Length: 321
Ligand SMILES: Cc1cc2nc3c(=O)[nH]c(=O)nc-3n(C[C@H](O)[C@H](O)[C@H](O)COP(=O)(O)O)c2cc1C
Ligand SMILES: Nc1ncnc2c1ncn2[C@@H]1O[C@H](COP(=O)(O)OP(=O)(O)O)[C@@H](O)[C@H]1O
Image (cartoon, rainbow, N blue to C red; front, side, top):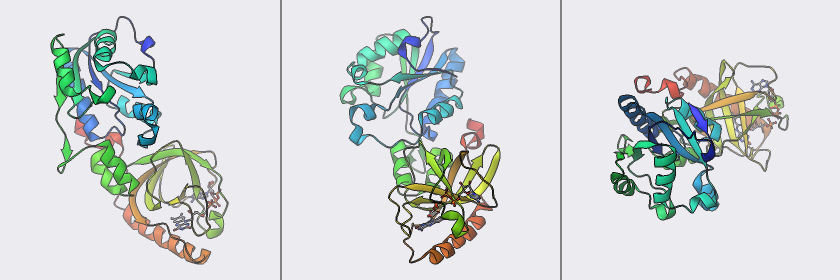
């Protein structure tokens, strides 16, 4: 997949394409259905497949107070879209002046002229532009006169609930990490560097790697069973997300204790996959009670981890890629 992060870098001789448009935060199973439609049209009609999106997320620019905390970093979104076998990713730099354009201008200038779109694929509820006037119906009407077909993908759902970034964000914010698997198609995870904390973990008998991450949406405070990837190695683990009320910290921390590991990993990068929530974070009366609780968390985690495999992008619905 070729990534273009500026409109001026789109080649002048861009070959005829089929384009989908959206924010694709999460790259969940609904997005993946859209990408499958896109790549299948590209194959049968010998077009290039193009995902056209924006960076930053438009709401971060237009209404920062209402902008969602995102499920993916920019880098993660790129990797996930690349894994969907798309030919091109166009990440349009989104700013206020770009937002001034009408949907008609944008479709004409960017999609039809620069990207040589012969066909568009959009989700049933996608809308862009001022007042969300760039609806699928608008696209269909506008493009009809130009000989460009618009394929509107109907809601794809799991057990009656349409896949939705908003729904996934709500579940993660509520700590329901196990419930997002059938919507997201993989275990929610975050990536980050191990930084030093207050050095209390070792004294408790449970050293914890303190993760500093660029991920915006962190699961609700609480204790979770996790799997952790460190390079090619995989560990089971327990993580505490929160403010360590027993000690009274001010900043949110993500502290993971790796099972059956000892060594130094400061400065290393870990990816933490959230498997199941165990309990709320608690203000214990003393350090002893905290240590007993962590030991119980570890026992439960070992049981749960016996029957769990990490589901990443490529492991889910392999026949559907
Ligand atoms: C599985 C697990 C559960 C934890 N639960 C709590 C808790 O409920 N309340 C709390 O105050 N600290 C809890 N902690 C402790 C803190 O997350 C943290 O590990 C401890 O304060 C050490 O911090 P440090 O690594 O910055 O020294 C838990 C830690 C682990 C590993
Ligand atoms: N099983 C383990 N899980 C997590 N970190 C471990 C483990 N064993 C050793 N470590 C190391 O110990 C460090 C954490 O020790 P800790 O006393 O909790 O200090 P800190 O306050 O810096 O997090 C980790 O960053 C890592 O280098």
